[in-house]
Length: 435
Image 1: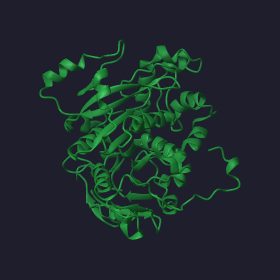
Image 2: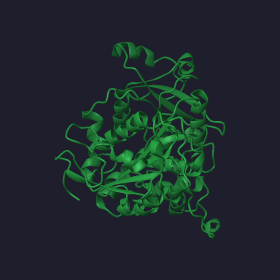
Image 3: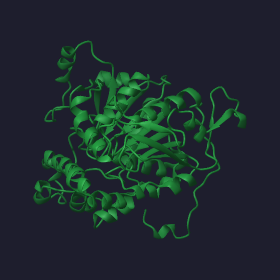
Image 4: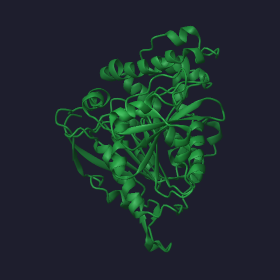
């Protein structure tokens, strides 16, 4: 698809869940269906149009810009304070909290060198470690404002342009945010010989519980980008009705990882540009943490130093065997979040583009979205992967996600749990399918 005037196509259940309105008495009249809340957001109505940058008239160009030119030419002056989170199952992740802009760049530079873990790599620009007292100051039993927990793309982190776009927009809207950087990502040093996968939801689960403990009154919103959308969607499906998130949004989720793997490998741009660059980033992450990874017999010298040219090649050698799979595609079938989409019971806005060079068009789960009243799927014909870049350099999709959370915060009573009689059907053969 080529062009710059995109079209929105909605997919949702005919009777989406009823969201309790603020100051309501709990009656049916004091609720709003999820799809009507989405309809209240400008640009998300079915058949509505949006305009992208005319010079980026193809999904591949959109994606190349967001991964390349946007990183250098478009500035999103958001600052992060980093916290290292030790996991009970071993290893660490890092959490980057959006912090106020410093009085001057010089004052920030002085703080960058403080509280730095010995032997850890230099952080990305506008990021520094928080002191123990600053971490303690984050905790609050009385804070009631929403907090957005963000899950990044494959091998990415808080430094990614699309995430800086989101955190900057949320900050401008007065909504707090924190980015959860996966093991080894965004210059988070590995302390145990274990990476991450689409099925590894335990780290997100632990961090979510930690935030709940530190902020018992804060409503939680969740966001997932690309591979982070897979992890978040899998987590929400596993938690089902026990999910602590009051709302969530996912962008460019490769719902069916098998279809996405075939898609990216069987088109020239995907195979020789995007797949190769993602594999290069993963290879670099492995080499940067070779001392720790070499403690495991799974990570041989050959695997650590090999130059991978595709995500399938990398996952065949490393991810699949690490998580007990024989091949990358067996892992993809198990980790695909479409397997758990029908189990999600958190109001979810999902945005996918049909011209995504990374996610196959057949991966977009129209029918599953229409079967689950907790989901509204927005499918567009333009946008690329994590891009949707407009003439001003901002992302149409990111702005809609921010509007979605603003609508929730303004309209919905976030202290009340969304009630529904919905339960996914369970096949008698479900135990034979190892999901």
